[in-house]
Length: 419
Ligand SMILES: [Mg+2]
Image (cartoon, rainbow, N blue to C red; front, top):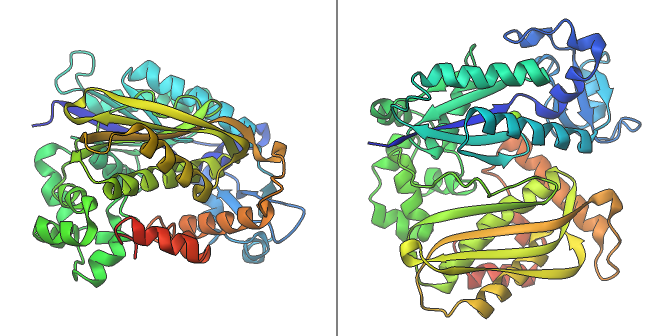
């Protein structure tokens, strides 16, 4: 039995909601539990040009068929009455920081997970939170009262289930869903494989190679077969398909978006192989870089944290670069260099974290003379659009392929998990 109840609180159409809430002419008529009271507003990359990309859309705009990552021209073709505003990233980040503070006021054990999401946890049967649904409602109401932003909260016996139940909270009227531990196997069993959060491309592999249609099908695959195909991830997939996840709340994992972005994972067992650790580093880095790009930030310092077996000892080391970047290609090599310099190569590794800080907004970014920055930025922007459009299962490692030989080489070196 889990000793804690975990929750994930996620803002609805965050950037678009920030815009609506800050405009008096729209804010007054909005109702918390009726998102059709929002205007048909979109935040788009460059409203002056029809080629701009939709970064966020209100539920009303989405009902007209508008979707994130769609070209503005295409969206206006669907409905010429769309209200188009340009992004105000610094404003969204300020709102984000304040919302995370409100989460911590209600749930002191809290972890920022992205610009508009946060995990929290509290003990089962805690006298402070006798009614979990009521506690979640208190948070939701505070966010609405203070920011006029709707939030959805999923709760369950671990972080992964909180993420999964959050997806179902998005479809509920109240926006709050709690999956009780005893119900989890039945709730997961019939969901499609692609509903498993966090698998990225592996969901496709499970469908194509293992003929798994549902999470129940995945749960029935012997863990040895998963391990043979996915390496260290096999165990994690197995665990998740059974509704289990042992990752903890890390209050410092993200800190303020102004300070830096980081991501950490506790491994299902001690890792001894450099190639396995390298895969984990790459996964964490992909996530960190994705968040950096979404926040339009680049960082000048990259850090690697390692906790050794028994969760005792380890290191945190950072390298300061001569220019800011949010490119995984560049940062990955620095991280491997840090690993090789500071790890003895045989002590078991139980947790890994990757961080990028000393941030600056991309518009303030200096051109690095040795890199074709605009072209590379365009490439990653495309990757992110595909992600947002087709889900996280789609692309990220295809970046390696488009960047040709050198990286294909590298993916070979890390054990072929992405081959
Ligand atoms: Mg959201």
